[in-house]
Length: 119
Length: 110
Image (cartoon, rainbow over all chains, first blue to last red):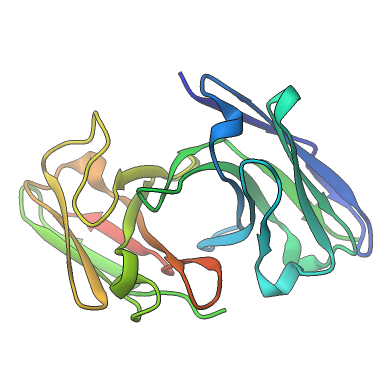
């Protein structure tokens, strides 16, 4: 059974930083692109970033470029998102999501970790 | 980055049929098609269909998807109370090198 378990969220002041983690199990982690997708309270889904199987390619939504960094450790079956210079508008549930590259979809989602940016 | 366009809300009666639409452009929906996700309040999204009309195992045949040009559609037949949820479409945008989502459609089953 595929499982994605996020951690690392919390309350942080504007300008602060967090490191989000995602522990993956139940599949060959090194075989999939992985993404972070966020959802602000009461709002829709917003893709944040993704990373290729070997970490050689990374893509970001414009609003987080230069502030967020996605990474992975295939030996630990883990995905990370370093979030810096946080703003109020970054407040959201952050989901770790497995991509199916060939079928063009997000096929498995974690339960998410809440990041709240507030003073 | 521009997203996909969905109607904010749709209301239909029990056992009726609802059709939700998702409009993009030739770089996303028109290129590789769209996937559909269902999200119940307080839960993460769940994949309903991909590559326009392929369903993961366990997804009811009452859910079917299609695409015409730059518009993808999700049809839900025989609406049930448990179908009341938010529905999102997604697609990879080859021009933006980014995933894009629709704003979501809130489906109410009367």
